Length: 290
Image 1 (cartoon, rainbow, N blue to C red):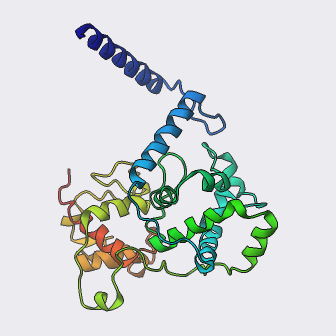
Image 2 (cartoon, one colour):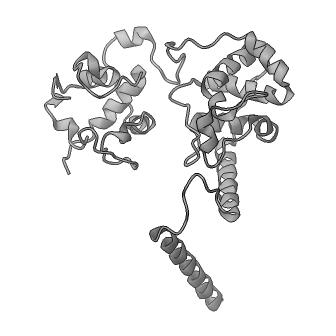
């Protein structure tokens, strides 16, 4: 038995060394113009399906019937999903043609994936696939609406899709996301400062692409030095060099930096009040400059 264990351990070590060598010497072609090898594709696909299934287990599926729900789901699908996944008789946008792996056809996905798994995937996204997480942009109700519409797709011919689509007006471009999970009511906001959730703020900073411009301790990612690093931001006297560093000012700055500095390159990310407070709560944990 000991010999078998040692042999297995040696094989695992050799496999890990081989994988590390392939990565270190750039032997694996990561170009999007080249597909994954079949073993790599099958491994990643299997891991993805198992991961989604495990995390979607136990999600309660609401009633997905009813034309209002289908229509609202179509409106969101057309605004957010059509560009990559297409629809019956409608091609995706050209940029999606170069994505690897290719975005899935929602017709076959709707047939094979349970509603809970569709919901979890739309809400949380899938790493290294181009599939974003919509948790911070759509409410749970809106995500279920999308799931309801996707489940209708296999029954739609191109003509039926066009007919249904003509019945549904486009989403208003400037509309605020409605009913985001945990979003405070207006009367609650008027009552005064609200504490944020630092752990939720850490996730929100990642989801709103803050890593593409800032180095942020504790968050793994690009950490690009386009803007100033955020380590030690809790101890700085000013935010953006112009606004006294207080929790309320941090929330206001995160929601609209150009209101205080018109020349700031930091864009308005359309943050909800909750996300801004959560992000501020995390930023105030960054007290050390190291």
